[in-house]
Each structure stands twice: as C-alpha cells, then as structure tokens.
Amino acid sequence: MDFDNIIGQSLNKGDKLRIVQELVPGKQITLAHVIASPDKIIYKKLGLDPSQDYRRSAIGILTISPSEVSVIAGDIALKTANVEMGFIDRFSGTLIFTGLVAEVEAAMQAIMKYTKEVLGFTTCEMTRT
Image (cartoon, one colour):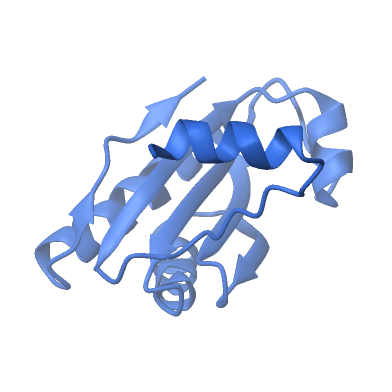
C-alpha cells in the first residue's frame, strides 16, 4: 500500500495524523531574508522595539544549522554593522536582528560570507522583500 492510501485510511478512521520533523545534520543556512520597511505590526508581534523609524528600518531573519552557530552569527552581526539583536535561539538556530536596511544587509552578508568561507557552510541565497 502506498503512503497516500495509508494517510487517507488513517484520516477516514478518525485517527490523528502524526508528523515527525527531523533536522538533517549539516552545516547550512536555510533562510536568510531581509524585510525592508516592515509594517509596525510585525515589530509588535515579534516583540521587537516599536520605536524604530519604519520607513528606513529592516528586520533580518536567519535559520542556521547546527543551531549553536546562531550565537556566532549574532556576534558577527553586532561587530559588522549597527544592528540591534532582536532574538537568538541556540536551540532552533533562529536569529533576528533589526536596523537600517543597509546595516541589516551588511550584517547578513558578513554572516553569509563567514559561514561559507570559514566554516564551510552551504548557504542559501539572501532574499529581500
């Protein structure tokens, strides 16, 4: 029996569908995104400093594996550009920082370069909205 039929039968019987998410070991940045001129509500929902000049500000978001490297990435961001740390999670590998668009992009580029060239990471393309 194929997987789709098994899922269909489980759902038809009223069983709960259980999904197991696993982190594949590796050295990688899977998300590197800059949100330029974010709406105020995004700052509020993320618990970030709402006193930013929203027209000139940006939020940088990274997801890194192994997750502990998010601490190193945060250090690189702060030493490279005038950004403020919004969130670091050494367990999930999430890093969020804020600042002017140019500063956030400079910090992001420095992190991407260091992890790729020094740590041998596979990195995704940096995106921006």
